[in-house]
Length: 173
Image 1 (tube, rainbow, N blue to C red):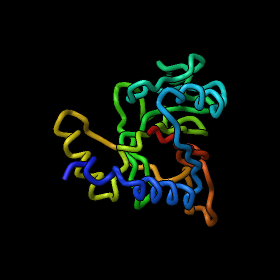
Image 2 (image 1 turned 90 degrees about the vertical axis):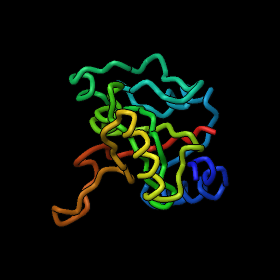
Image 3 (image 1 turned 135 degrees about the vertical axis):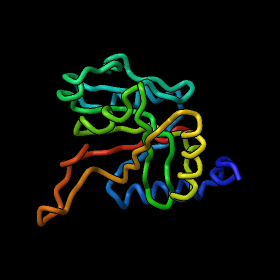
Image 4 (image 1 turned 90 degrees about the horizontal axis):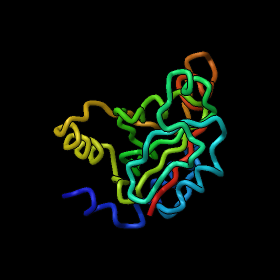
């Protein structure tokens, strides 16, 4: 079964958005042509971004899309594509690559991920199946992100220790 055989139902998107809400992530459904405007409104500056992998979606002109390490460290926000969404977990999947999706999604305190609704899969097994086909063509790692970065290893829950304290997802129809 291909990914698009089971993601065209509104239920996967609804479940995904419900799970995102449960883990403290805001999501908005938009058209690809509105991505730059939405990012411009939601990002804090200075901002960094990785080129988006969605047709007709672009970054605002104010975003540094070829960030240096210095840019990443001083950025207030970052924007990347997510290659998959996992409905059952409310997770996004970022594949670090030459476009710097990994560092842009991890360094700034706020991350906005842009995900096509058609790239939502029902569960982790489906995500791993999809990723295995991408790995066969050269990709070699993936990061599953479920909510803002947090840790409980210091006696209480602390947000933003190992990555962004804030995550938003723009879902592109």
